[in-house]
Amino acid sequence: MGKAILRGKAILLGTLVLLGQAMPASGDGLVTDQDNGSEYGGTGQARWSVWRGAILRQTAGALTQRFSPEWLAYSSLPPEVARAYIAPVAGESRTAEGWSLWKSTSWMHLRRNGAAIAGKGHSLSGTQGLDKALNDWLTAGASVTVTRSKARDRANGTWERTWQEALALYADVRLTDGVGLSMQAGPVWQQQRFRDGSAIGLVRGKRHSLGWMASASLSAQRWVSPTMLVSGRMSLMASRDRWRAHAASNGAATVLRPARSEALVQGMAEAGVSWWLAPVMPYVRVAYGRDLYRHNIAGGDRDDFTFTGGLSWFGTGRWNGLSLDLSGSARVGRKHERAQTLALGVRWGW
Image (tube, rainbow, N blue to C red):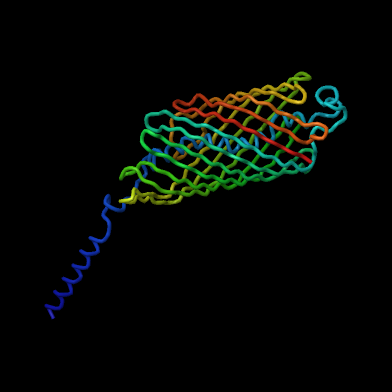
């Protein structure tokens, strides 16, 4: 009986030894990559969190272009003012009421030359929207935005490629003549492929996020002369990304990364001047932006300035209801960071 018990213990001990040899040891085959402060996930994912604010502005900016000060001022003028000042044809409706189909496309170049987080890349974003003027003071609609971003740092070999899809419901409310409130909110889905640093060196992987984005802006515009328009805008933008737990590998070993939540709230104040030169309106704007709240977002600076110049065109006659907007902007003020954006907007109303 005693020999049988000893034999059983020996078999059990041998089995445990074999299982221990078969399972990968920590640092040898399977490693848990712990949170490393704001640079969790290595340089690549830290760089993405730094640029999250620029991507947020790019996404929210499509609705700003849809309800631009130039279009709002042009479309809301009473007939007698339009005939006297800016309407190419007396008595002609400047913008069609009812439905509006619009498209906004923007390309942004990003660059950061900091010692800890560096790299450059670009982001291409396209928004398609459809809305309806329900009455004289309320317009409501929906939009879909697809954004594709790429960034890399040749010095350390890290890169990330992000595909983002955002669905938004939006509304524009005319509070008084020349004053309005625009709002939008909706879910945001992201997929990112990356090559970045970890506890075992450079690794490759893929991660997903399902979050949300919302923005609201209070705008005002006023004709100070028959050909000059001044405008102002106060905006608030917020986003939350919920990244799922994922794995990354270098071929020989694998790291496991826990789920992570990132949040950002930005505020912006903007002022601009536009000039009516029938049938176009050139304009210049300057905006001050600041990060009001950040959670798990890398980067030190919180504020910046954005300078924008553009040209709006409004169709008449057979092109009545068609409008175009082309603009370029540069963001400065954040140490080691720069961003330049080129945007084109098209709207057709009927």
